[in-house]
Length: 93
Image (tube, rainbow, N blue to C red; front, side, top):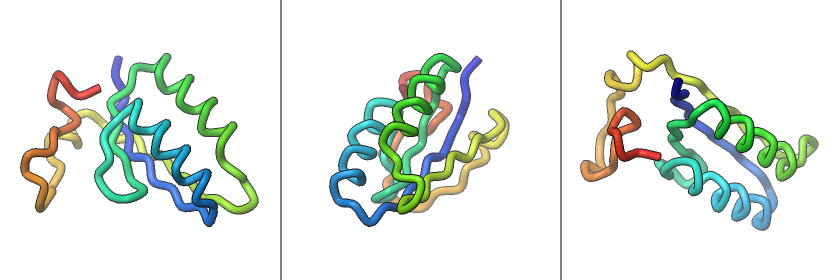
């Protein structure tokens, strides 16, 4: 079973921001500067969650993961970046 997730974060640290972006690029696609869309298997989510928890400073940073039901992915409304893949496309990792 796959999970569809939006990951959004904010941190005052340039270093942590860069590390989070690098990490999330391995699990999804960037949609905004600090927003990624991810399609994950449960084992990928467990790995990503552990790595996020290692990176985030809970006193300074904010990171949120919004899980989408599969039927909501097809109803996503987006303007711009027409060539950007959708979460429900098979080749999206």
